Length: 474
Image (tube, rainbow, N blue to C red; front, side):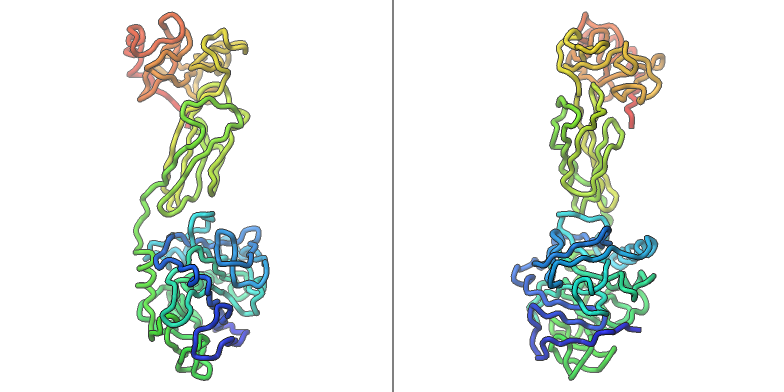
């Protein structure tokens, strides 16, 4: 049964389009005719596939201005307003999200409750009550409607911000109705009108049956004195009233065709994010507190990015800018820095660099800390220090470098090296591992480290290559 506590208010009772300032309340739901969309010439095709349902965790502040979800501005409230956060259980919220994912499963639309930030998206604040935006009692949802008369509509509003007032008592423990309201309000920004069919999200009647969009649906709303709230002729009365579809002037509207034209049909998203570490440079010298920055992009949307150091997750960010600082606990030596991006479909992409922390040196005597030796141009703890380069180990965690290697007989802490240059300390050889190398205790060419081009190095590599396993901590 409809909960209609507000009579329809016709701010314009003539057979013409409503003005840009009119709020038209139809039963439980509201239209707001937006002149802003037409004036800005919003694109006719969707510039995003992301639908963000916002539970307003901690509350949402809505500012007055041109509708834009990136700045939380809307032309619906008359003053800066606060929406209380979604007040029902996590079970209800998850059911709303699941219902919407099912409703949009036929289209290339990604439904998420993770804020896409500045990435273009559509947003439905699914929280609060209408009165918090200054709307009358009984309004359960409202959206901008981008039409300025018959045949004069934008088919898509960029960065739309609309509202489904999920905290209204009408919605208590009713995720299906919340879901349907969200689906209706966002579809208004695609110039879709109300319809009569009670199994359609665009209905103004009490919902009945599955919530799916349809083609060839009769448009309908309350009919008073032979006119719809949009000044167009209509027939019938009450819940069965029909009217010519606002915007098109046709008797029916084809919702599936409209939505498919905007977004395309559904297809699994298998494209991983693209990740590029922009600072520091690969093989750079760093200090604790050095900034690590990355660009993470995706064809649909980025959900998060994680900073890993030597295979151990340090910090997760859920939106750009993606920037971290290296921890103060960073030990001397070489470290692997990795940024792993995850998109809204769970696909991951990553980028990795190597950095070195330690005092600059050219020989062991340049190092002032007892037990340090010169490796790769930086001072690192040597074999006389527990966990230093060349000291015995059983696991990666035993080593300051986070790298423990095993040749089948011995296990030593190692650090990465370049097999084509002499960058291992005296008493170590750079042994090839995969496409790189590690400094391994053994004979050298008299100081400064030997490389794979040296005869003694080749002998050592020949003995150890088949059994050496580089166990990077992950």
